[in-house]
Length: 265
Image (cartoon, rainbow, N blue to C red; front, side, top):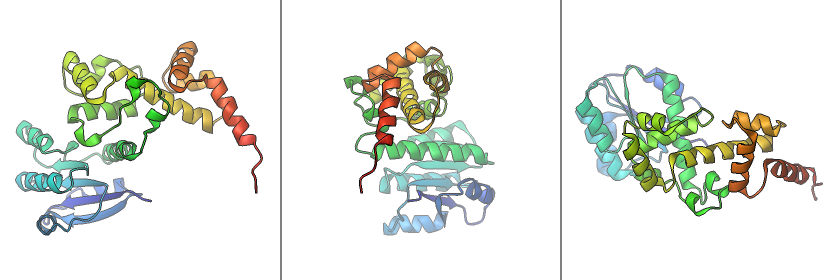
């Protein structure tokens, strides 16, 4: 089923609407005016949606009021806030009121699409009984669940970055910079929020992707290791076995045997 995205924009300022709408092609889109949505909030007649793009244009104060209503009425629905006005106080208030991301007009359509895709993927992971990462991890350190509603913006920003760049040579200094936090406070807050270290989560992303490649492609073990960000095959095999209980080669052989079994009618 298609994910539902609601786009809210000012009645008299449609600048950039076409670009936003085109960038989200493939989602089930619904459009609404700011004033119209205020009325829906008051009547508690809000439509079902998976994500909201709130474009306040120059009406930042109205946008903030609506954002507060949205997070009160739909606390589990992530909101991306867009404005024609940029100042530090506004951006801080946007995040204080619960927005997942802030963009200044004009929005880069490709960047917006990547962000929406990333947020909805994480939201889907949070809604599963066990996330894909948990299914491959049997150790207590990996027993967390993504509850995206309770993850601070800075930490979520780092998690999204890690998910998109897991194959890069990432380090904690880079991630702390993405989160706009000191290295010490980033590590401390990350562990408090998710229950594992940043580097452990990167490893989980890499192993989960490796499982997909081993299952769906004919690539060699060494090729998969490099593809997901491991420069050393031995290191890859060690992490893979630690998190899945088996080696990459045995995992692939088991998949091949399963796929070759004759189907029963």
